[in-house]
Amino acid sequence: MFIFTIIYITCFAVFGIFMIILYFRKYKGLPIDIWKPGTAWTRAMIYFSFCNIFTAASGTLEQILSQPLFTAEQIANPYWLIYCFFCFVYIFIAYWFLWSRMTLTFDRKYFLGSEICFGILWGFSTGGLLLSFHHLWSLTGVPSYVVYLLSFTTIGIWQYFIQDYFWDIYVSPEHDTPKSILIKTAVCHIPNVGICLGFLTIWGNYVIFIIFFVSALVATTIFQKFPAPWAKGNFHSPMVKQGIRGYPRAAGYLGEINKNVDKSIDIRSI
Image (tube, rainbow, N blue to C red; front, side, top):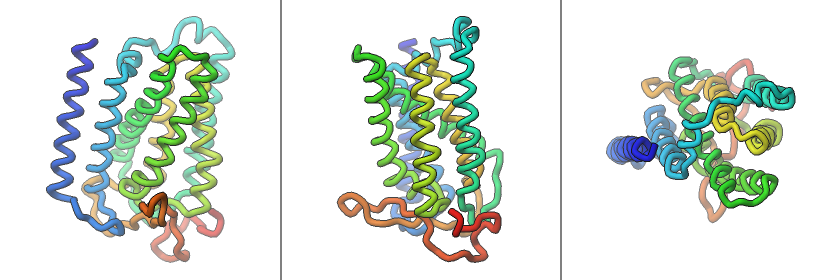
């Protein structure tokens, strides 16, 4: 397993370095108010490389590969079944229904194949990174409820900065309003982490925790109509506002309803 981990880290390090070189040679200097699919995919691949390197280096990948999906005792336990089912139902309602209804697409076209692939990569990479926080805290020997609280806090801080100061500016095209950002955070993101992290803390199913995130992020990729890297046209770049120390952070769309906004969405209702 040690050799496999080294190979895994090396492959993602080489891939990440290649993406960084590609980015600096082809996309460096792109203004913040211009969004291009190729640039967004390259930035995402750099981030995914980092996530997977961290997951492997932390020892989390070894646990993912060595653990069964579930044990015979778990599948025979009604409480495990109920909690697992509840997590999937919540993800479906929160992301495949509510999140999709609160998302702007600006008449972008579907690229279903690339959207599913991107969502799987995003879910596995992000899920693995967040799982690693829990894994590292669990190694400290503190009680499980303390592991939960420390993991939840760490995940919350990480996701806040990554989403607001990186992902929703430099990777995702515009898909939110100020109101939808607040609602999604309160109704989808925070409860999802809390519920799924609780399942992980109680039952320890690393792979299922990853599947939870894949399920959620495949939905968000599809419903924001994330363009394929070869997509052509003009895309609405994310609107920003001043954040900590003056750094730009995601603000959400503030414009009026117009022909460029997906007709199935009424901004006034978001």
